[in-house]
Image (spheres, rainbow, N blue to C red):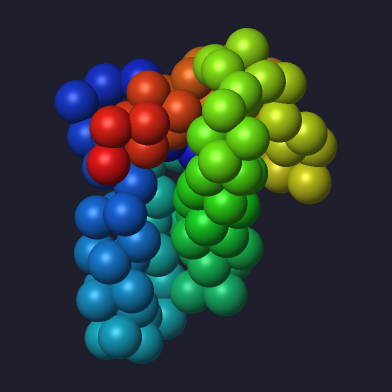
Length: 101
């Protein structure tokens, strides 16, 4: 989950993640949570960013607002360590950034 802060370019995050994973790392150490396999990193990080970008893009295509973004069902990522604290804030950040892409 991307939290609030200056590094909000989720499209760039995806490109950088893909580049990093092209090195086929055995272990990935995330900023939040525990280190794990590259498969775990894809599931926890990349898939979350990809999902949120798609959901927010759909909201924007429907001319909806940030409140709809806050209510995106992110329960598939509930197992993440920071889920409860970050899900709604992450949705706001995605919306705020993607809105002006």
